[in-house]
Image (cartoon, rainbow, N blue to C red; front, side):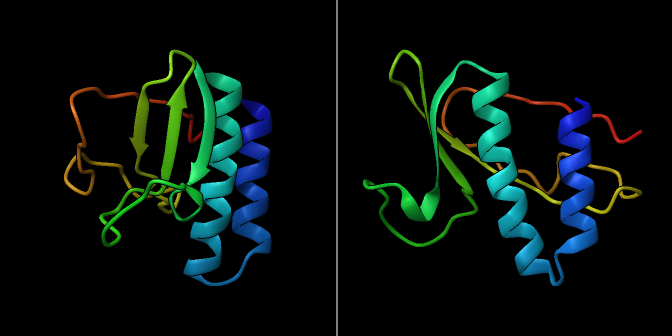
Length: 103
């Protein structure tokens, strides 16, 4: 995914502050998920009309092409930091994974 890697580099190089980087990364993932998977619509959780309750770590709310809802967590780590399952929370019954290279 060379375009994704380029966009990720831009986020790291041009956005300052962890909050800004996180928000930009969520927007980047919103576009990447629509282009790379069977997801029809992806919205930031704060833009989802049927959201309720406090923030539980869900970054994106999606709808599969078949109409099934999907909650997505985004984690934005430094390139040298390993990604472990510990910081990830699983929601619902299914899981969807989008892998990217760190090379």
